Amino acid sequence: MPKRPDSQVWRYWRTVLGVLAAAAVLIVGGLTGHVRKASADNVDCSQVKCVALTFDDGPSPFTDRLLKILTDNDAKATFFEIGNKVAANPAGAKRVVEAGMELGSHTWEHPNMTTIPPEDIPEQFSKASDAIEAATGQRPKLVRTAGGLVNDAVLAEAKKQGLADINWDVIPFDWANDSNTAATRYMLMTQIKPNSVVLFHDTYSSTVDLVEQFIPVLKSNGYHMVTVTQMIGPREPGSSYGSRENGPPVNDLTDIPPAEIPDAAEYAFAQTDAELPDHRYRRRELRWPQQRRVGERGAEAARCAPIRRLCSPFS
Image (cartoon, rainbow, N blue to C red; front, side, top):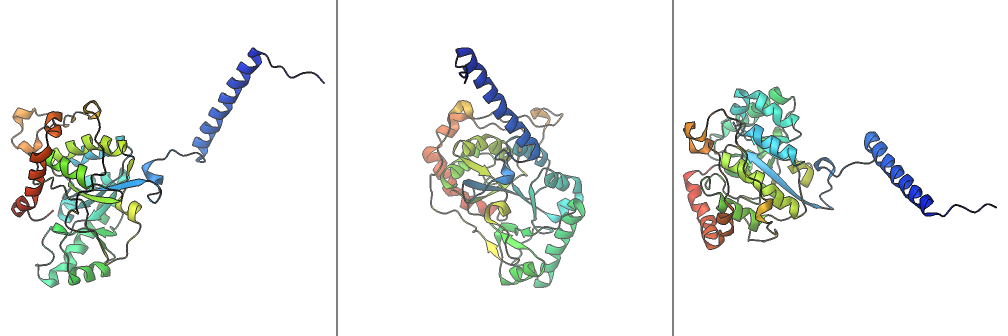
């Protein structure tokens, strides 16, 4: 029987052939769907760390940029949009769904659902759902009321209309801290834990900047950004999930080096900063020294946020 070649040349070509074979398996598997990248679409949140980022009050002028940031980072999120805004900007709502995000209702006019006349409750849900369905072809299954305020009558009507109520367990007060994003960041660093539902608002440019800069922190800590339904599963209509307050600090996150924090991107507006009349429409950048010095000042600002919330009681 002839000997099998065992020269250095043979070993070299044997290695090359093995690498090529493995590459062929990966390519064919990727094309046929048998080998899949662990993307946000197929994450199992019972096996890995997940967080559900949620955004209220849109669609807004900043929603498209936020969608690009999420898409570029293979991140999913859930948007709770106000019905009359969707009716005024159906294309904006449609782009949220087309980007693979989850879209829920934030009622028609964003009232305090616990103080409006009981006879007005059904229309707040139905008109918002109608607008979202007309814009996207999908009727929402999730709802978040203004301020997360519900009572038995609100939940009973939500059940009739096939809606599950979703609140949150991390509230970083991004709207109150529009000019102090270091305080918002402090809340995120101390409050986020596996399976957190985080409340944001895509109506603030500073929030979109912060999300762009905070996603690398989440990724570095092994978190996958998914939709609410993907993380907690389908919810029964009329049920209520989450809370309206933060829990005690968990300090689960480890920060990343300054060099890994991206600069806030410029907005896709023709105007320069000087030409923009409203400070919320200007570019904001989180300055790293400010972030690093957050310490007691950041903690104090975060503690003050619930008091400042009195100026803007509804999310």
